Image 1 (cartoon, rainbow over the protein chains, first blue to last red):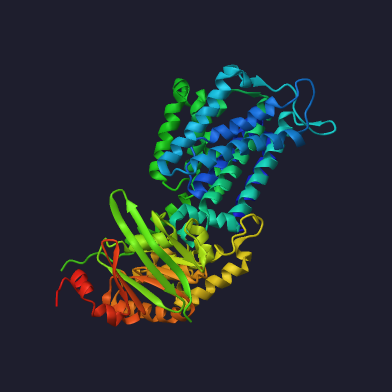
Image 2: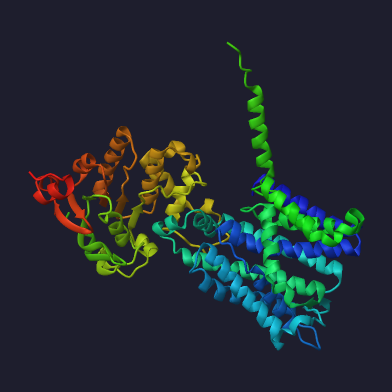
Length: 331
Length: 249
């Protein structure tokens, strides 16, 4: 691990452990939600940033993870986490396997559209059939048991459970990206033609990445259902796929840390633009403010927040180089 | 040794109404360089793509190391021992020269399920990459980003990556394209060094170069083979002179 990576993890860990001690219930809830989105963003980062597959249907896996958790919880009694979580992951991964197997036959903009179509399909199944409780969504009455009487409930407990999940996902993806598999994904992202010519069955590599990504989105969905105890079809809508894509672009593609930074920044910006104390009546139009900020950030920081330091260094050194040039002398 | 490593029988490829490659037979022997020449659009690159498996056959069959690989995918053929270099530079510009070669070597030692092992602990791909870098003389540039190399160096890297996969047969699509005289000479010497260990199919425009190194030459016009023989035979072949050089002597 590089020093900067370790530094990032230490800062993140200490902030996440320290904050709940001083913050209100509202902040705790916000942090939990944002961490869930960070996990969700990491799942998409594996596809977009590491493999170069722009998936526009990520919310389907998130929603399926959440709905599975709620649908398979017993109505009268607690269910075991050791059964519910793997089930949610499995359901999301299974749908990812089906979507991936079919959509990975296409490329570029077709791939984006096909993944969107599959996500919309899942959305309408949940939205319009009795299976998912329709537009109203469903409540989770009994949260799962971890063991004996330890139930996954209470905002502080769920907060720490989410924190640990975030670090486990980060650790897993970190390992994956430096493994042979991860290097092959980078190769596919840069030049798939060449990867096939040297002997990599790129289709299978991409499919496995797709399934892993779906499974991680499923974890995020599961946590989301645990946090609110409620799911509705909106978590499968394409808006959410777009939001999470925006997060990783804002943070900077190609880096796991970028996804986490992006998720937190996005949530923070949303919070700022929605706050009436800062923006007054304009806060009703918070989408406008957020949208403009995002456009500005993409225009000014093409490599995202994570690439900002490099970009600043580059322009500074350019500026200095110009500055040091001897002045033109007139003949 | 007269062992045929790669054999294409009656290879055909149709693009709609256009017959890009028409009933072409080609054999590549161990320890020989077989050159394919022809005008632009004669079907040379398509021939390479058919042999490599990048483009599916419309007809005919491909045999690699005495196995029928006609229906095999391109990566599977590559793993059996078919190395292909591209006409246009097809490297990984964002990675270092070393990483380019390591990734190519890794194709022979993939182990994707071992996600807990970092790539740095993969001794096979590291030593294999270092070996080809040393062989091609690129070791001095191994930490440089591949996208920043000069054109000639990129062509060298193209071949180095091909070698890193440890192939028995090399399909080289215009390795000399855009090279200066000095670089061309260096590359030709290198091909001579490779010859004893491999079977090489060379598609090239540079006639002088082809006649210098090739053991056998196949001449293609409009997708079909019009002549095949040793360099002196080809030089004196009337059909070739008419079709290729445009002179009737």
